[in-house]
Image (cartoon, rainbow, N blue to C red):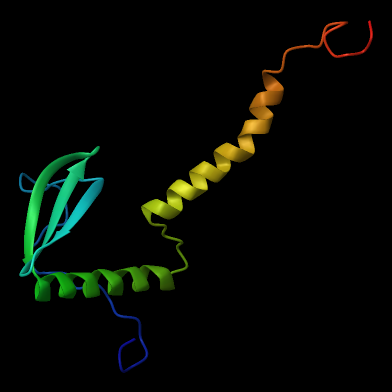
Length: 119
């Protein structure tokens, strides 16, 4: 929170167009590595590496702080933003709930003599 008790607002750099351009990279995954002097962030698309970003520890920490500020700002709007692990848990849970219904939909009818009914 800022001294005025207002949520921090994301910083926008003048002259930077947030729309896609030739220099934009879309990614849907990442891998992190660490060296004694740098953080390495490898951006991935569908599990395949696209590009690696090298940043000093200070810059990586600053980036993490700024991302956290933006996430806190989004959280204050009431919008529920999930990370990948949380989203996969939701999907996995939904699949588990659907399984009994799918099993019931695909159940084979019991024929006389198949179910131990003596007939």
